[in-house]
Image (tube, rainbow, N blue to C red):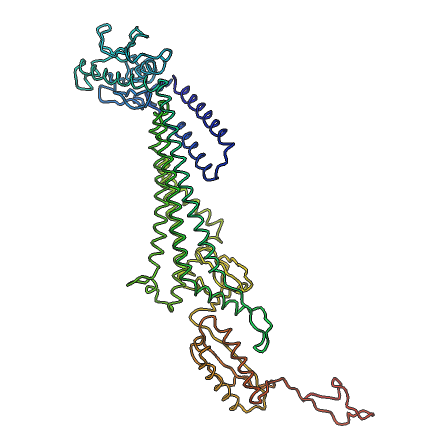
Length: 636
């Protein structure tokens, strides 16, 4: 059978088998993942059948000969000085049975220059005769009980022949020549006996494997393998379902922890009606809730990562089981056995690259989590000496997230290069082309490059981190996510605002280390300044000593003094240094107490004043003063 016919027949059989399997699966309700696994198995089978390398000696001699220049031997021929050798393959398994030798042919530029005893023609003829004995003599098949394989003389040449009771005419399988004995280093008689034993075993195995009884046994074993694969897949699918359900439960808990509760505040302490919180108060609530549950969210993230890793391992367990099952099925049937070697070549290398890349990514992400988790004797936050403990925790969270993304991209790129190397694509060319492509992208997507650079600078300079409340001018809110490309804010109205890092030109960090209440109040001009300042200082000290508010302030309120004297009165300024995000709550309470204290001591709030003077003789005839906008009244 010619190689073209063999490949076409194999392709036709594959298509028919695939259609039969798909038609049988149509009435069956399968889970989407199970369907994907079945399709993946079929594609793997087809890919191996269509791309597996056939033994070169089984192909017909090409039309134009061996090497391109006619001086080099064909790929299936090995030249050893004055002798050339080629392999003889099993028609069932494709394994090498033995090698035949012949004198070296130095000129293969034309077919006329290739003698009949050239080694490639000898190997092709031997392969064809073995195939005739095993594959073509099927009606009836050769009888194993009367089958004989032995040495004989044909025209004073040692040959190996076979016959049985159905085919009494001897079939010459191979001629044992002086070149064969010289290459093997044994006498012709001994070499003939060795080859006779090999060929006898090959013929008997081939005829037995192609018998109807053996085919039925192989079919039952294949059904058992398929049932085993389906059973194992079902068990693994049940485990994956249980893990997925647990993941959904943890995701709900994480979402509940990440969503701050809505807050309603009284309009006035004396009233019971409720009002919506101010943006400042909502930001306080968001950040406080975020920090209170930060460690618990990290714990849930680690548990989710572990469950994700378990899901990944279960997926690869299914892939491994099906891979081994398909390999066993290929080894089970004689016509498919020759293709089983293709399953342990590039396919397993590609799967290995895929598996190792995914495993290393997960290990590195786990190491990052482990490295950034506080443990006895070591804390990654100690390496970040900038800021207090809370600030270091926020920065650790931000850097860990960015590091995971960077490691994932880097390892995936390495895995892609390894996969291309397995496929035979030169990785140096790929890297060069990738560099050129990256340069072109950098020119065409300069904003993306700016995003990445600015994102790196934000992390390196610690301009802000996840959990900070920032004001970017056009948007403000709690930082929920930060990577090298974008920053995501949660506004006081609950909106998620996504901003490219390149668009961030100015940042107001409202929660960096500490905050301040800048409070200024105008009192009436006739108020005694010393009395007003003394009242505010006493109020400030009482306010600071209040246990309900002291933990929100870093120092007692500082009454700076009178900053301005005008027609509105005297402007007195007070600074209150607070913990991050407490400035709004502290400011509201302090203003309330100032209002109550001033009212208690009879001090009026400053109001704008303007004095008007009545011009002489401006009385009207009826004795009334002119209107205020009259020219008779001049402001003084």
